[in-house]
Image (cartoon, rainbow, N blue to C red; front, side, top):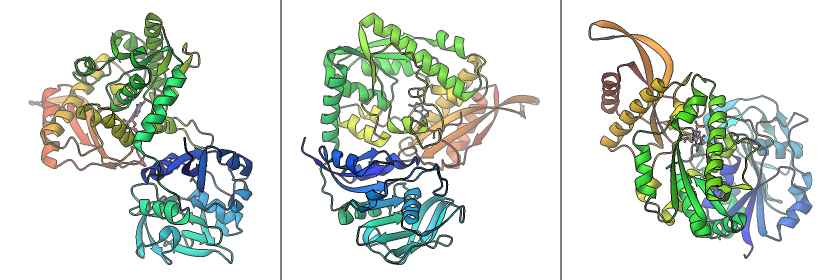
Length: 515
Ligand code: XMP
């Protein structure tokens, strides 16, 4: 493979670190994540494979004033490559340069206005007032001579800076999240104007590389893939079948927390693909272990473990040695697999995997992609449109949408409520607009009146969000008449429910699922 022009992202543990890489790849330039303390000799060694044109230092949860905080090798700033520090990276460069960085000086979270004082370099072509997205406590107040202040906010005197001689830049805000309106333009300025990188990366190239890697990882053996009916595992299955053909066996496990009508949908859809499909009814087995469990992390761990056990049994039936999974990047990041990041939750297909799995290896062809990239790959591989555009559904299914103790009755209430939300959004032709829409069965009961008598029933919450990649999300504004139909139907059709509420929280501070 010819060496691709590449921008490396050094990972300081920020929730959006990998998203920076993804945004750069969106620009058609290859990007990879590297450890924060990458040495100049390791950087030189990467040069055999990649033509590194610049570096980004990501955000992170630490304070630069904490002696244990991750740092980069100072020689990196003198390597001759342009460097862009984002949030923590911005503060780190400022501190290394001898700037005035104050601890906890100006806490700014969320959308902020920045004033561009000098529209140069990374901020080329941008108007004076910019909507940017911030999340920081430490603040840069001043930079030494030779450094230019490019932008400030009401609370942050140095919100963007540069040192033009070496091409060093810092942005206190996050250009990689959609809430920074011109964020992609800023990254594009860095990649093309400052680093002078050339485009060479696209989805065709991704497919080629991944098929080749998966074939190598499978090493001539049979593999099984867990198929959930979502776009991730379906796309992973098509990629895997391209790589190893008939040696792939797809296993669909009905754990009892699937959406209404799901098993039939899977059998109809995947029966048409050129792969062996095995459908396993494991409803009793899962509920047997989960009945009465209320801790969300425990639910996830049990489901993750049971899944693996079912896959192991199926694998020994068909003689498969490797497990292929449709894990995508956000699953991994939220499970806290990196050194400097905080754990948010265990995705069942990541941290839920028990230590003693009886597979030679677990292969994850989509491990570095985001959902919308997966959709593009799926479409390119010929996945039906309905599947490509299906809303994401968590691996542990409706179990994470039933708050408190799990029991058959509660799961059934949740399934029916979820079906009503889904079908009403489809009926209103709104189903393509939100990223996800579903019902949550809360663990709260309230007094109501049904007929002429007092009713003590469950509260169902309706959740619908807009998002680009699930890392951040805004609540979707379902029109009132649709909400009214949903509420009326849920309370009429499900006797145990007498109140419906609408969740109007963004992510952050909430997550998309309730758990
Ligand atoms: P949160 O709730 O963390 O969810 O904002 C982000 C996205 O991930 C989906 N999700 C999962 N997907 N396995 C998955 O494949 C899981 O265990 C899992 N848990 C959450 C969630 O539906 C949302 O789209």
